[in-house]
Amino acid sequence: MRSILIAGVDLGTTKTCAVIAEIHEDPFLRRDLKILGVGQAPSVGMRDVVTHIEDATKSVKAAMEEAELMAGAKVDRVYVGISGEHVRAATSPGVVAVMDDEISALDLERVHEVARAVAHPPDRELLHAIPQDYIVDSRHGIKDPVGMVGTRLEADVYLVTCTSSVADNIRKSVQRAGYRVQELVLESLAAARSVLTEDEKEVGVAMVEIGACTTNVAVYCDGELRHLAVLPFGGATVTNDLVRGLSIPFAEAKRAKEHFGVAFAQLVDPQETVELPGPSPGQVRHVARELIAHVVEQRLDEMFGLVQAELEAEGLFDKLGAGIVLTGGASTSYGTVELAQQVFAVPVRSGVPGEGLSVLADSVGRPKFATAAGLVLYGADRYDETGDGASTLTSGLVSKVWAWLKEFL
Ligand SMILES: Nc1ncnc2c1ncn2[C@@H]1O[C@H](COP(=O)(O)OP(=O)(O)OP(=O)(O)O)[C@@H](O)[C@H]1O
Ligand SMILES: [Mg+2]
Image (spheres, helix red, strand yellow):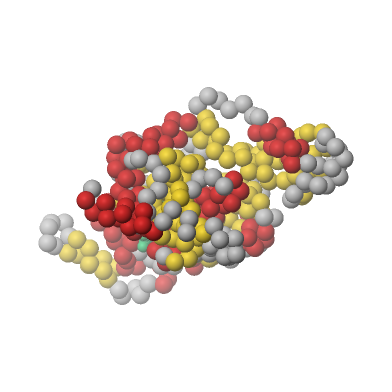
């Protein structure tokens, strides 16, 4: 049976993660996405953006090959995540006169085109054009105007752009690894796709994805995307505080944070101590776990405060009926949800990919995989819309031969 493979690769600052998933073409099956392979490699040559093409290429190749081996299949194209402070997003309006009595798909296409026709500087490229609102003869809040009677159609379209050279370097790294970039996808859109529910988007929700160097924020209200922001802090900011606070190297501080870090100091037993490496090899020293927790809590508290300030500045904080969904690797410390609840004073939950995924879904069932899992879900949505973007696997034999060949390569 012919199956359709969708692949995604997330080039994070700390890890590059590849996911391969399968959509069955059988129209009678409920559409869910089977995760077939997941591959991970430490990211080298990335610091928010690609800083070294050769190294980034190696990370992509290693992660993709591991995912392909696990899936027993080869793919030729991938959806690739992009993020960073160079990303800009703003609403752009468009207006057209309706050609006949009722609004047609062509009118819709024209109004999108008008809204998209904003002159970008030559060093920027358009990543996404996302409709936020349609207005028919001054009536706002129309979700699908096609078929409605009206004379004037307006659209608010959210345009997301990035620096072209950053996009080109990502494309180059992926192409050199041997894959075609099907589409660059903003990481926060991918992460939101994997951890938010449609109900939350309707009621109002902010996804806050805390990675290593950046925190991606995506806000949805009334079912539509309202705001995107990329903030310049993340788990590495917390680690740097531990480097200073405990006078230990970055790698040790990161390990201490991941093993013993607690984000809400009052959850820690004040008597508990943990062992950290001492000043010379072979030595250990005992540190109060509460001390580590205080450092982690203080920094996360400040980061959440900055997220809240961003949401308030956009006038969106009061619209979050469903509250905040935290995800990303740096949201994993025990007590992060409790701390966030105290800071934001709205409902907070941890966002873990899983909805709409099956088979090996548990292998991406952690907050740090939100973007990678979201990329294949995004790709599957695009396949449903356009019939494009997939690699096809025509028989089980191909995958077995591929897996066998890999043993020798
Ligand atoms: N168990 C854990 N407890 C606390 N922090 C953790 C844990 N596991 C990972 N982290 C932190 O999460 C961060 C990495 O998160 P993630 O994998 O989402 O980032 P990334 O995608 O590599 O980076 P970015 O999205 O910023 O480019 C690091 O700062 C790491 O220390
Ligand atoms: Mg990330």
